[in-house]
Amino acid sequence: MDFTQESELKAAARAGCVRAMYDLGRECSDPVERQYWLGEAAEKGYSPAMLQFGLMCDDPDERRRSLRESAEEGYLAAMYHLGLESETPEVRMRWLKRAAENGYLAAMHALAMESDALAERRYWLSKAAGEGYVPAMFVHAMQCEDANSRKRWLLEAAANGSEAAIQELTIYEEN
Image (tube, rainbow, N blue to C red; front, side, top):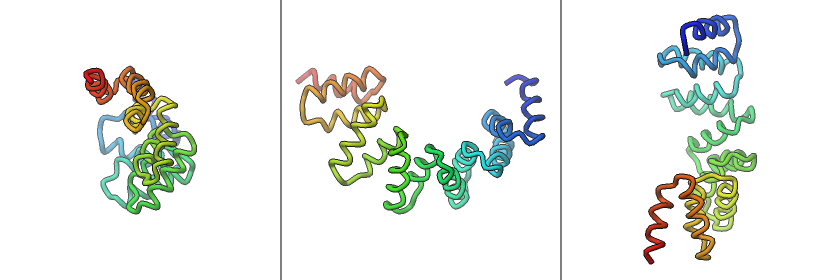
């Protein structure tokens, strides 16, 4: 960001433009100023700012409060992070499931990994893998009982940069 852009962004943020506050907070190199502007945008109810502000907080209660407010506004990334931050399995699963059911791929993967039920685990891994989420592709491949399906998913994961899949294919090809 050059000086002119930063000056214009600061002027808009000081004038009360929530998006400018958020953008300034995201682009600011000074951590104190970053937290200030994200906090200002979060206080105005801007969900992406609530999420970013929450993720910056050192205080776990403040962190969860900010994530919860954003999640309750329907922001899927906040639902996912709140699920990961939750202290009880029931609350963790509830938030992850809400995000997963609304299409958040990382939440699908996390929900699958948290699930004790094999059918639910396979369902969410398959869904996330089918949507292109590489970590889910690899885990899904490793759970396939059919060798052709396993190899297909390993190849797909490897083609999308999964080092674990590349290593597994090497072992697979040696046998």
